[in-house]
Length: 280
Length: 280
Image (cartoon, rainbow over all chains, first blue to last red; front, side, top):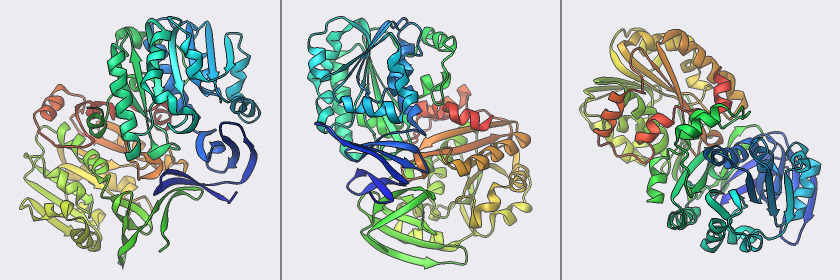
């Protein structure tokens, strides 16, 4: 490994950063995982050369995938995480005291096993008695589930390789069926700045609108992800994030966050004009 | 010039992008200017190797430096731009029909002269009869000005080299004096993700709070600037951006934007928790 890594965001651009040391490398049936030590971001996880996680700013992605939906739902008991093997999302879900059961279905056990060694602050969450870890294909797992979960969070890699199916309408339909009558689905949905991803984001939005009562796309600044801007799509059968009840729950939640807060809970859903046009 | 450029955001990280061709290069007494053609961002201007402007996303920085203040002020007649030689900010100021006079004080005539050749869509604004171009030191220019401007926009480079003085309290005090009794100052204030810039942002905020009635920091996603997140600070003697009057003006303004819109006018001021802490 050279002393600088490039995380390509398109064939013509990328984030480049200094690498002090390759700490670990392993190839699973699904992907190649590397852990590198960097002066800028601390420990960094790469999957097939793509930056997944940094010690320095993992909090943005994980807080913003989890908390808006768990605050929007008045009483989330049962949560399903698809993907999320590094356990950063899981650790945030467990901060919500209403949660009684979390199932995490990660296709690649390697990701969780290696995260236990290099990101122990995230993976200590797996010892919580509310957690069930399943290492299996999330698409297959969901096929037999009906009316079971209050919240489903899709914490996937990019729409190539193992995660490709998690962006298809069939999968979104399975999520809809697996949710209870008032359930909420939230998915990571890539960067609206990257031209090649715009059709993926637009199609996901169209598919969600055809399935759910309310669809609420939102954004966050993630400096180490593509183009520094990341998008999520919350799809809800009943509850809206813009309710006085949500704001009250958040005020009373005592969540300790480094990105998410009461103003962001509403502001994240206010989209720049070029994103509005992309979804229109 | 190699076929890939690195725009360093710290000694250990940067944005890297393919460069097809060096179109122009010139050294002024102040800085080295280069115009390069890129497949990802179209034409790009570099000053001393630092990315200043791209055809693809210049709209974010220029819309967001200009419009929030010009919408917050109920009737901006006279506007001063410090820096801004590429004329992207100027072109947005002129979209506001209340504006009768715009003075732009750029220290380096090279920037405007070369922009006329390579970014003509931005510089055509200099032909507007409301515009006065001054090529001089903005700090010196402001010293003799009292109670003259409704709006001052500081469109500077980073706080090294020619722009260093534009981040000092003495300069902010000159701006305060040059503004009318109900004037508004808005400055670009760097990226809150970059550790070395955090003290600069914090000091500017403290200084502005000591001088102005209301200080309103806000953010925008600028994919080609440092860490993809940029900050601005609006400092106002009387008006608040959160007034029903502002929203009505924006609704009636017929501005054509690609980033700024009615929800963003409020949401941009909602800061992630780590930025709130930085300013505390």
